[in-house]
Image (tube, rainbow, N blue to C red; front, side, top):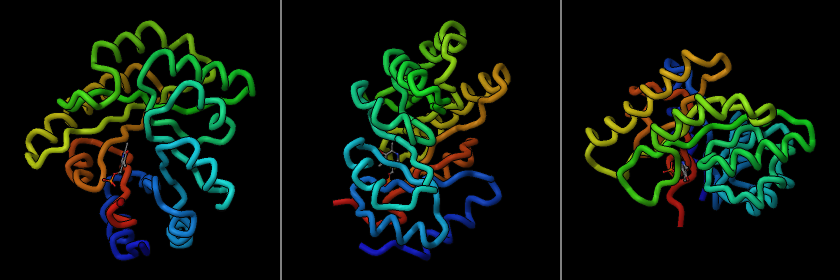
Length: 218
Ligand SMILES: *Cc1c(COP(=O)(O)O)cnc(C)c1O
């Protein structure tokens, strides 16, 4: 499926006043589709699967900033640490520890976001607000190479905009609170094709958009 050029430029225009970063979610898309969006100027791309990311990365320009946004298994961390720009989906302390360990090994600072559990759905991974509180107050200073830059969250898949809004607002207020405590903490990653406008209204400064740009996934 060809990249939707009009949607891309409309989205860029929409994001401007919010000064929000667009991560183009390219899971399941071929390298040529990613290249087409790259040729329009896009540099930040998000992937969900390590193997797929590694295969595509080699076929694409090396100034792409790769974001990892899917559930990450600890045993795969090592493979992405050397090049990953930002991991959005740190959803447990053990995963955070593994990122720290692998980053130390190659003496790299790895930027990460803590994934917050804000949706009602059981299937969504992430920390609840008490757990986030614990990480910040007890663990954060122990990590010297895994740098916590902000939070990521996904709202419920709901047509009820009030539900989505409430979830984003909850995350946004947790984010604001930590932001005042910590200097280098300035990314709030929330919003996808279906709910990015609501997310931006609630304070998001990074959206992860796939199907709006690339068309529906199979
Ligand atoms: C797939 C995915 C997206 C993008 O979803 P679209 O609805 O295609 O925009 C965003 N964030 C995460 C974590 C995803 O897995």
